[in-house]
Image (cartoon, rainbow, N blue to C red; front, side, top):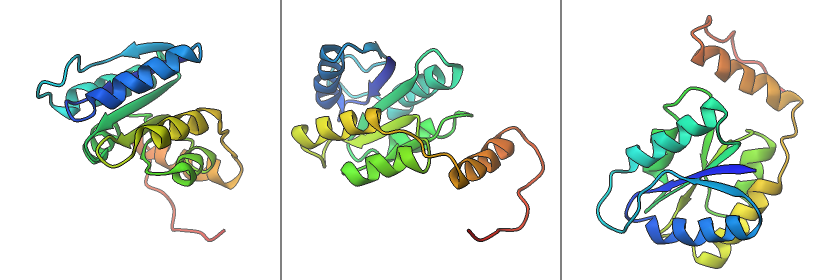
Length: 156
């Protein structure tokens, strides 16, 4: 699988460790930067990874910054991207099962290396459940494409 990966300076070390792990698992990794721990702005790598995923160049994306918040905000500005900030294995699974997240955002300053590796592996292995969740994602996609607003909320 081709996976786009990126970070700002705070996430650089985590990005390099996860990149090596992904390559050892046989994935093709597209590194969208940054290339050192020197100060770098999170939108640069965040948008580059999101564009790679949105265009279909990459099947998935993984982003790192200090808290993961900036990366998730930047990546979610790109149409077709569903970037999820996760902190543990449960939120990693749920972001895929219910939201079909295609970009994973991780807080490099808040999650240790072992847990981060586990989160990435689990996220890549988890499948989207579809069903009622598909209807909800369709509403988001319609909004992104400028179609009429969603109908009133429904239950279920």
